[in-house]
Amino acid sequence: MTSPDSINLEHLNHDRFKSWSFSQNICTTCGICSSSCPVSGVEGFDPRKLVRMVRLGFQEQLVETRWPWICTMCGKCAYVCPMKIDIANIVRGIRSLRDRDQVPGILHKGIDAALKTGNNLALPKEDYLFILEDVAEEIAAEPGFEGFKAPVDKEGANILTTIHNKLVNTHTEDLKHWWKIFHVAKEDWTLVSENWEGTNWGYFTGDDTAMKTFIGRIVEHMEQLNISSLMCPE
Amino acid sequence: MFDLLTDYIRSGRIRLDKTKITYRAAYHDPCNYGRKSQELFGHGYYEEPRWILDQCISDWVDLFPKEGHQYCCGGGGGTLLTPYRDERIHYARRKMEQIKRTGAEMLVVPCHSCHAQIKAVAETYGMPDLRVKYLWEVVADIMIID
Ligand code: SF4
Ligand code: SF4
Image (cartoon, rainbow over all chains, first blue to last red):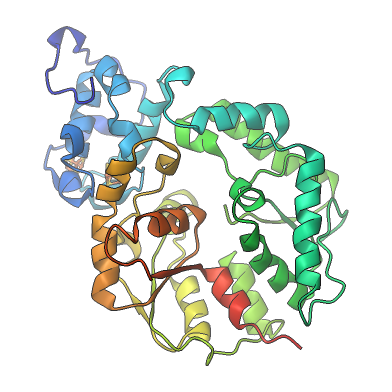
């Protein structure tokens, strides 16, 4: 089923989401959220309908439909909602209820890989360090950047920075912008050799446990290397 | 990130050559630095990137609507990593209309997801030549190097 247009009333259960604190019960069904949402109408989706279904406890249909996965959790609907209903987090809550092997795309696979290897790509440490060095050498070949090096695991640096996995995959050129800025600003900065992943896909899939693990790793780096500032543009 | 760039520019640790970018640019507020940051940390980053752009580009403009009312690019919340490509393209139509209306040749975004999404859909919406750049990329491009 892609769109829950036929509702099985046996699934109606007002108490289902009682513990959710997103104010879903005070929705006035005004529809302002739906007018503001760029994907209203796609597969019968609109946020007002979704909030209503949460209110009525139609859990099976909500979890099964694509709705929470085509919504980008952008928060525009909540921004205009007169009742301040936290619609984006309701969506995240519904995402969290899917069986993990039913999570669409590469989201959960990336999380699994990151939990095991420290990054979403399962990129081995040697390859990762090789890419960093390679890019650093390219920068060093440019005028004004002679002798440029990308510091790794530098204790006591001023700034620690994480990496978006695509930058050590298909977009290595885009590693250069920040590195060059650091160089010109004479910043004392460092990358890390392990658990360097800057994205947190646990946030996307509603996986709080994974999300906390990933954040915990960054905190651990900062404690171990004695660094107080983090630059995480992911 | 914005604070750091602002600090480098204000303190003179990096100097910029504003004459380098001669065409019009437009700025897009990512949901996470705007609405989400406002909600979670009590501060939406709206002014900071605009101040930075003022230092970088003489002709840059806002999309309409902007800031808290900004449209999402359509690639956020992990949707870029799902197979729902058609939905993503459809989602982006408002964003692309916004950009088209400004007449800008370049869109500046400070977000990896927005960057990937706009690049992926630009051609579909008849803007194959639209340049999409990270805010820090713009800064790095026009930095004065001694
Ligand atoms: S804008 Fe708020 S109150 Fe109105 S329908 Fe949407 S969720 Fe309900
Ligand atoms: S958070 Fe989801 S439902 Fe709300 S406006 Fe954005 S895409 Fe639409």
